[in-house]
Image (tube, rainbow, N blue to C red; front, side, top):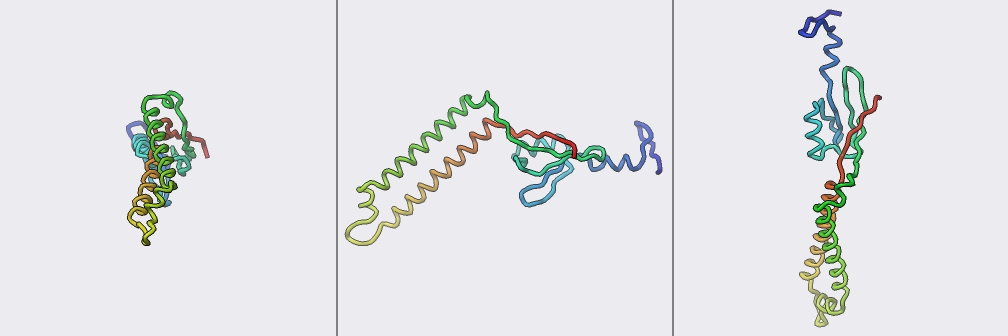
Length: 161
């Protein structure tokens, strides 16, 4: 091997090349590998939500590989915080609206509106009801996701391969 002289001392070419690929790597949903990322880029990817539990990730350091386990930890102090109570109240309001809407659709007056006796159906009202159901379910789903993200944090633990 040819020794190289650096400011920190004599380093072989193999040692120098082992540090070139150091960093974090992960595979996205499409199967594309991203990396090497330094610590700041890795934390930025975590903050953007690119690293979710179940994401395949690893770290290379000085030629050694470490598996990175990504998991979600719930933070007890955030569960009963003011924003969490706000998410809970929004969820209860939307759930109550959904229950009332289901009751109203089954009421005899609404059935008479939807299917008049003179013939023909009121398709416009049916489409509006379906759209309202879809929006309520979408809003509840988004709200639960925001609440989960607020009360939990994604953590990454390393273990040698």
